[in-house]
Length: 382
Image (tube, rainbow, N blue to C red):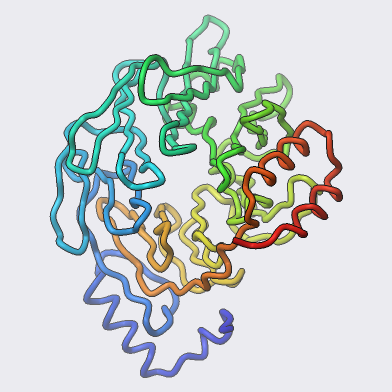
């Protein structure tokens, strides 16, 4: 398997090919290093800076904001407009529905569309939505932040909503912190950034950030894991408030998180064991579906080795089907294609109901971590 060192020894000819591809496809995207032969970069479309974007599960359509909110088909180069600008978007697992959160004042409206752009359902909630994720075909998870300004600071809550697409979303407050006045004056986007989550591949857990403001120390976030079935939680790590939080590995047993200051870490949260580190703080993180590639602060890693780098402020999303990466930089969205990923990297044990039960027991302390690992290893792969 090629390593980063091997990538650096490509022939002059292959580097010239890469240079031609870059010049033709992404003249406005600064690139440091040589992409492997077969990997291409092309500009997709203009997008609004800091706006959300997301692949559909098949990796053929993109929800994005280009002037207005739209479903974009990069192959046909056309878009289906959906209207106002959302703060977060997410496709359902089957790709038939698109959820979006639209902010207004201190609150938001959740809407679900079909692929033809028809509005199917909507609901109002309190707070600014920072993250959406479908737990199943009919349940949407929503992270929202509410901020109440006080004379002695501000009360900041992180609320997890669960919505079935009908009725009123159910709310659970996961974090509540009273912060000091100078923190209360931070830009709203910075305060919103302190509460977000990632959903586990099996849909049974989330890893989320919880703001802390101890009187004698600098504010920081805890990175916590919560089992959605049992409600049991454990603290996995701590990080600076500039951290992007954490994402799950393909098997749901590890997390990749940025400490927001110095490095990003592969962690086994149940054993408390650090498995690897990357020398970049993890203020933006994206992980490919099989874990072969990671985009951290604009640096693209393959098999743990840095392959090429883009501007540190760029943000990315890997196609759920693998092979492609969307990268937003400035006012443009780019596509990096040709990222091969072995299918075997995506395998998880079969018998998900049994595995979900074991994971729930582990969260509640009803089964030891070694016993859980032993039982999991005996399960066949699907």
